[in-house]
Length: 248
Image (cartoon, rainbow, N blue to C red; front, side, top):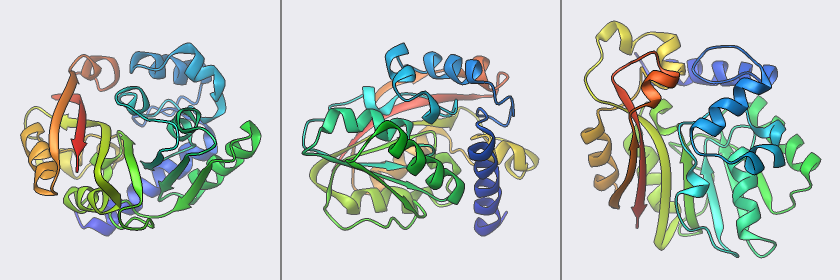
């Protein structure tokens, strides 16, 4: 499938989720209780969820803001920021001296995130419409990059990681949770719109994923692997949620 078509599938899908407040993996449930259940299952605390509940859409496969060190005064970049959930949690850590930038390709998500920022009073967060394969962010300007179950949606993951590397300062860190495959999918599965939008169809094999990060210039540390997520959220598909620290 052509890259532009994949992006349109993803953009349309997550635009609809922004409008409906629905949960992830194409389930279309839209219930706040389900969004909370998913968030708890992937590592968010009750306090995290309740503090910015309207920003939690039940999306993600981990908690990148809880995986690594985000310090007061840091500049944090969130790839695929959605309704702003991880951005707002990061904003609490960086404080008034720090800043958080969220980038998302869906106009509906960016508008929802801006609305949430106003609602919750976050002045140190901004949201930009953009493609994570071509980030609207300056070179060497970011201390920490985070991403939560988004890179798998990008057709060219090597571009994403090269772009993240470009924006990071020397010694900067990337913390990400993402879906990776444990065995190959069929061509039919690879081209299934629902699986593409649901974080499965475009995912890489785990070893290929890690190699792609290293090839972009990062030192890579695997922090943890969640194989149970397959049964909880993906109907037993051959995949896992991989948690990674990548250092420039």
